[in-house]
Amino acid sequence: MKKLILPLFLMASVAFGQSSLRPTIDQKAQDIESKVIEWRRDIHQNPELGNQEFQTAKKVADHLRSLGIEVTEEVAITGVVGYLRGGKPGPTVALRADMDALPVTERVDLPFKSTVTTTYNGQETGVMHACGHDTHVAILMGVAEILASMKDELKGNVKFIFQPAEEGINEPGVATWGAKQMVEEGVMEDVDAVFGLHIGSQMEVGKIGYRSGPALAGVDELEITVQGTQAHGASPWSGVDPIVTSAQIINGLQTIIARNVNITQAPAIVTIGAIHGGIRHNIIPEKVDMIGTIRTFGDEQQALVHKRITEIATHIAESAGAKADVRIKKMYPATVNDPELTEKMGPTILAAAGEGNVLTNPLITGAEDFSFYQREKPGLFVSLGGMKKGGDPTKTPSHHTPDFYIDESGFILGLKVMSYFVVDYMNQ
Image (cartoon, rainbow, N blue to C red; front, side, top):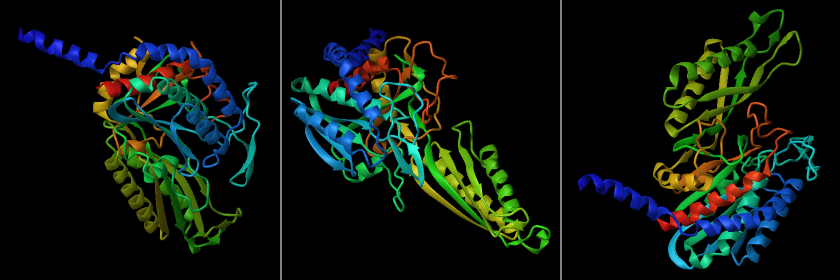
């Protein structure tokens, strides 16, 4: 008899987490699919950069109000928050979508191709939803419509977070990001759990990927100024060469990954992306400026990498008679899926995607400011397939490129899984 108790208990636990609203959600998702695609195409054709999402925000706010959802606008400048009160007592579940586009000129030949242009960092450029945020907005608008239509049956409340500036804010003196600012303005205070998704141009439609624990890297910006002594290029001994010193620093930084980071636990990355110094072939310059990016998968690892960058750069510079000024700006912490929440939602993801369509994501060295929400409350962030069936991910354009493309047939799964997250979590 004892051998039967545990399996029966597990079966009961799984059943307890399932909501009877799933079939209704499935039907409503099918009914609304064409509207979601239409919304996405309109947003794609009219992209807006971070903190400039005025048209997108208005579209979202108008839609939420039409559903009877309480709306707060101008959160974190252009953000929109909708609050749906369910008919029964229960937790408050937050769902998040990011709204901003990128300074990328679109090359994909679509009837709804973006032709929007702007000036960014002093350069003329196109504006494009080259990371799929238009998809995220349209899907969450659809989820809001589905859940609003069954609000009397919801065992709790839903907070819809439409966030600006996930890609950052390109303004002098501004060092914050959409999610961070929304958290600072209190958007997570009454939330019990938060869910989000990201469309993937190199994951086949119909698939969902996720992993428990650290999922996406934390990202920081690195700046190093190496100060030397200017000299004639024909007599380098009369000065201190910051170019040679910088080259040694760049090589030295790579030993952090090779010799300091325990790569059996998680990888880390230190990349120098640009180096500027000098003006003429026969002048050793006075200084060199370097900029780069740091990727880590946790606070402890981040602290180690930051410490070693500073030590290596300053000590190599000192050994050459130069001086290195190291500046590290913390940006997004690592995106960490709460293990307990992830385990509970595993059956939910499987139910939405179906057998054989759920993948375990590798660690992703890209970053996401969804991590700021997860620092406040348990959160789960998943990947949604957006590559055409049978596509080759090695030949499919990646995110942040002019040829980025999303197959819209995957949207219906996004509608289902985000709605399932809400009703199944409430049912637990």
